[in-house]
Structures are given as C-alpha cells and as structure tokens.
Amino acid sequence: MTPVADHRAMAALAPHATLIIVPDSGHMTPLENPKAVTQALRSWLEIPAA
View 1 (tube, rainbow, N blue to C red):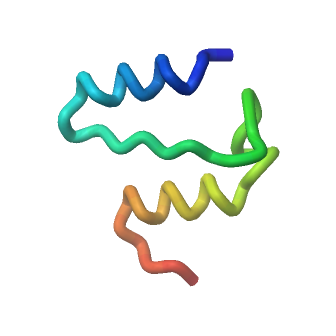
View 2 (cartoon, rainbow, N blue to C red):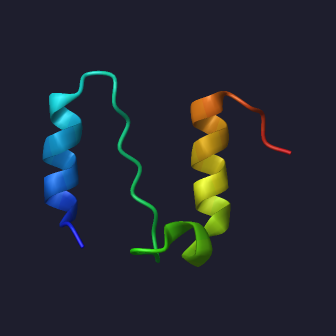
C-alpha cells in the first residue's frame, strides 16, 4: 500500500527506528510470512529464537 521508499524515508526520521522489509508479503504480513514477523518481533523484544 505504501512504497518501500516512503517507509525508508520515515525510518530515517526516527533515529531509534529499525526498518525491516519482510519478503513475500504485503498488507497481511503476519499471515503471508509469519516466520519473518515472529523473528522480527523476537528480535525487537530481545527473546532468543526457539
């Protein structure tokens, strides 16, 4: 829905932001690529991989 370039620009404005591009997904990222979403959330929450 929003071009990646726009997300990169928004992330550049937030010094503590981390932009994660999830491959093979779009509007329903948790359903389309749940492993990548889980990995990103675990990293953000500092939970080791299972």
